[in-house]
Image (cartoon, rainbow, N blue to C red; front, side):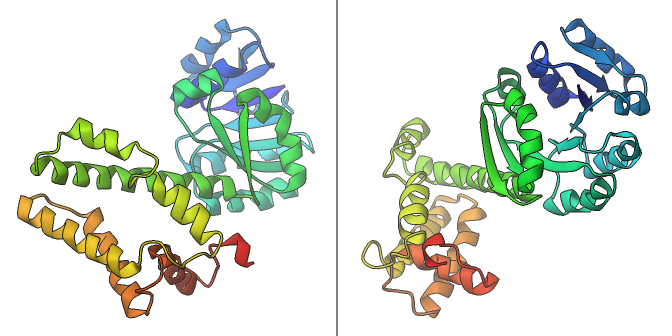
Length: 295
């Protein structure tokens, strides 16, 4: 029996995904939300958290904040059977996951984070990807439930790593959104139709996909910084983009901020290396290699 606490938009999608695939007990502070799910096969509503804890072997959390999850776990942990698994699907910080660990350990509960990569529709259809963090034993305990939720599951590492991956992924999405808007506005100001510019960016050798496929995966991970496009040439292109934006009267924020590392790389003597060598700056700042090939 699976318990689900929180049946907002995503929680409802989780329940609908599990309907007919598992026995589910749902609870929400708004009892009408939980009651509405009982029309689905295999789902019933709990009137209290205590009632839910007494009947389930696994607990799914889909709540609006880390503090809400912490409060629910604190209330439910003593009533859950030893060996039950707590699965956090709400988007929280890795530190929030680690803060739950001592309480779960005290009551012999497994704890994993299973961040949901996509939206409500994808969860409802099972087409989402779950980003999973937790030790090996906890991940094994959670796997049968996670498999019911999504066909794609990516185990990232220790507790909190699933949430770290999602937050970092979202950082890419949100920053790229700003870059796309800035670059599209620059191109349009010089007569390039936005739709044609989007067509260009979708090509595998264009500026959107190539940094991931070639520079990160093929050069940085392989420690291959020879040849390619020199840092000094990449910096020159960055200067041209800033000048073009200024001449066109297009405000830029992300593109402007992204220029600074090129200046720092030049000052560090990386001018003749491929501009993937920007990675060396972050390796110096963090003290950690970004390349698995070098470990």
